[in-house]
Length: 170
Image 1 (cartoon, rainbow, N blue to C red):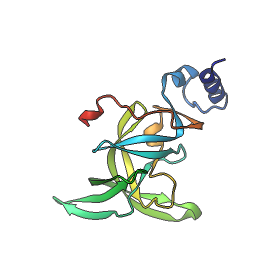
Image 2 (tube, one colour):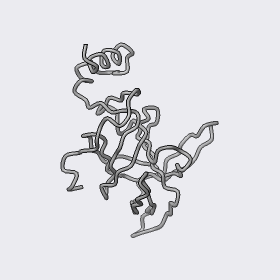
Image 3 (cartoon, rainbow, N blue to C red):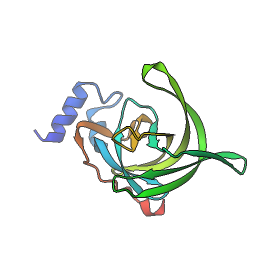
């Protein structure tokens, strides 16, 4: 039995491919629990943890500044990758999320829309901004991005190079 056949058989037997069939899962790209991803605008590569338990993706923004532009709230923030390269972003705030933290406490976070490329999958998705300096990964990719598009193999890492079609146009 080939490894992917074993993986999909195992995933299906556990019911992880909820609402779909093994054939559906075979058609989706497989990624590991940690991957290199690209964020847009800017085509900037960082490492991200894939977290199917989180609804919304999160991005490390320790120097977050909120400001008003043309009557709307915007977020200004920098993201630094593992090589020490920093990219500056200014994005319009889409909404404010109320996130439940460990211990039941809530935290309000600004949410922006960013293009994200994981493997061959690109989509514009909601990303909340928070100081993640105490975490190992700059970004956490949540279910809003992965659901129905990707199969996550929790036993593997860095298996899907971020190569989205037409990424140069983004």
